[in-house]
Length: 145
Length: 387
Image (cartoon, rainbow over all chains, first blue to last red; front, side, top):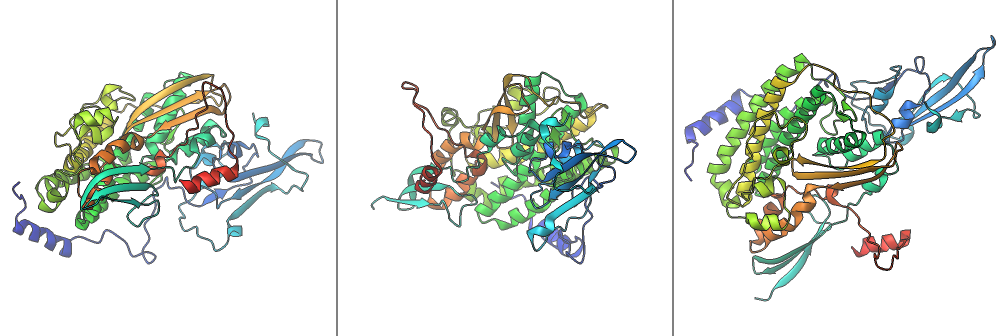
């Protein structure tokens, strides 16, 4: 089969690659690329807006989330749900299903992609709506409407 | 000279994934070949029966890191078929777009690997540099470079915005031009031709006999493509040729894949033109009514088959996955027979194998006596070591 590429064309391409084109890579960590808007980086949890419904726990494919909640009676006689949510982020696969399932927008993902930690304990994340003691019950997924 | 039989693997520097290959050689010629798989069995099918449909979506996505979207697509299509819903039209077009994006990135990845296997590292570097364009597009659309989590039950998670369309078109046009350039290289570059022409040849008849699928089958002159034979999504509305080659060798498989990259770009352009406005997902029931469905789609490596059986709860009773590599493995053994030892890597690589996707475990009960057997953990460990 005949060779289609001339030496001159190859030389031109070589000169172009040496003089005009920039490297395909960047000098990380001096230079950092900006992830796109939909990037799923470090998870952020807002306990204030969380309703402790447990939908995130039910849908999480990696068993990252544990919702602990309890119904308590306030001084004015009204009942409210208090509790906290525990995240074992070392297991997270960053699928974003928790954020999608969350009706109150309490879980979001940031653009921070540098998530390495020296120990596993540092991956544990805890967000309390109101502290609940050990008597607080873990959300049973069957009870979630 | 006496024939010599030797194993390669399961752990070997030449292998990307653990598998056991056994070759019988006569001098430099390969006389016989056999393969033993099962070293990366992950019990995914069984695990699917332990989780709800939403969780299974991400489990199926992790069957393969390269064709992850194809797995979620097949799973979703199967579950949606059982429920009997039709997802919004725009979602179908976006699913199709993602399906073709993935085909582009997978075929370009394969072309780079093929260059690496034949010692043509320059091709490997150039192709993988160009592949970054489609990776950037996938990241922009879905948020991730791999495991996109884009396809979900009832549609897709994200819409394609007007700002994205311009970037996608620009990237696809660049990739289309580059793919044409690589098609020229594959047919004119002597380094490439000498390592791929007449290597790993298998006839079309033999491919059909052994149940090959995908680009391997098409490169042997058999024009079978699930997208055309059993159209799904909106494939019946777009125009695309079925790329075949009569060469039947590694060169033919390369040309089919490179030309499919060009076609995939064209399909994506048509998708962007024809995509209607509307919703991209719909409310999907948590509990799936009793039923079963089989879905076949044309993944990058070939025909991917999903079988899902539901029992009326939010957990499937059975999920069965047939990956294209399993169908292509018998043909891959035929490819190396009669060839040189030095051609084994590229001949095997030409089916674009993925052993982690393929490993399944089948335990057959004795049908006549009705006897079944329970294996203990120690027995399983023993079996694994023997394998």
